[in-house]
Image 1 (cartoon, rainbow, N blue to C red):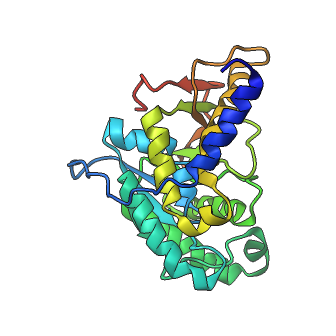
Image 2: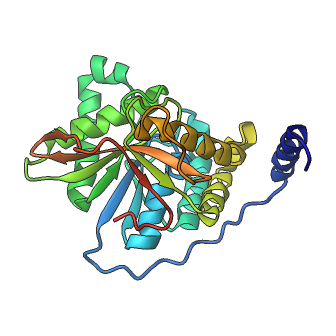
Length: 280
């Protein structure tokens, strides 16, 4: 490779070749976690979000013995596709070693700000579903989208989880880890590196959402997205003009604490979590 033209051409060739790779649907062997193992809940607006934002949950499972449960808030807006999306979701979660919790048969519907404003009865039913899941699992960490993640269901899921938290006893506490995909966070405070093996595992699981990646190969774009997170994270967390960390792939999050019925922001501005350091 002698030029940037060669670099770009090679990248394009690899992308095209990647379309022919068949994902492996083999379940990841489950760790024998103790009965009191800490729990992390991923609140996924749609099937496939658990893979896209799952870098830190995957590391928590593998490196810290955290039980990761993906909560399927919805199964998408197209009713005819929901049975297939659920089958794909089960395969993807199994491939990553995540457990799966459904909110309702077929998932919840109309999880967006409009429902929250105009149909308080339907919204209250959905809030109670999420609150019951939180009460049941008593998670140490929860992963909802942030409040400006562009897609209406992503934003709706954020407020659904926050409204559910407000119904719980003041004694309930957990770490709140907000995620992003469609809309970038203005103030992330954690950049989590993923190893080559972890990126490949996330790509494979994402590819198992065959109906989604057929229309848009999210899985093949995931490494580039994670590289761009390193670019952004360098200055958003380290300050303007800061050098980038020696990461190839990473995911941005915003971490705070939920306790005594409200959010308590962390004292630190930003943290880089390398693959060499345990998440907790």
